[in-house]
Image 1: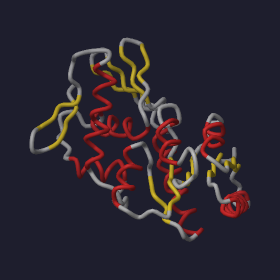
Image 2 (image 1 turned 30 degrees about the vertical axis):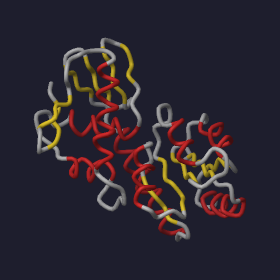
Image 3 (image 1 turned 45 degrees about the vertical axis):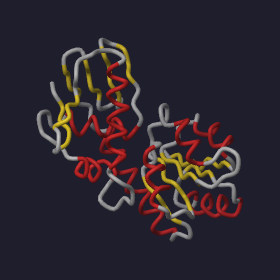
Image 4 (image 1 turned 90 degrees about the horizontal axis):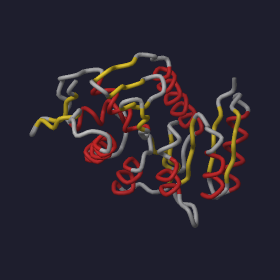
Length: 224
């Protein structure tokens, strides 16, 4: 089965170039020329999204924020912005990587393949962890509490996966960032605290039991 790739950019030449490039390598390409169209195409559950940030109207950051709770695939931002604040914001809304324009097609394809390989490794894990009434399902990449599904954004689940598979082990913010976002990511580990806050809020809606404990001055650990 072909990998389904969504390319969203308001520059038609870029969409055409990338579409031709990836189609020639066997990808099934979904194209969008603006944020609204990207939202519609995202409903087709692509395997990876290349998302331009600087689109008029609904920009890439807004698109990412709106789809992240129901689209778990990797989202790679295409951008001419290189400010650190923009990168931190992009990771905070659920982005997985930044590709700065102008970019090499060879490097872009290499990053796409790397993210797809990572996804394949995740999907190959059918293991389930039970923590009281909370179940971590690694194949569906979600949590269940007393049978009720708790949907997590991609990076939120990645953090839960890391902590839950190593219960009792303390992970600092920098280490979590390196393991979940990657060593070559150009963001900031401060996004880890925000993601953990969101995870806790979703679990707290079901129970007052603490699963992710803060070890002050050190980091976080999973409690079974």
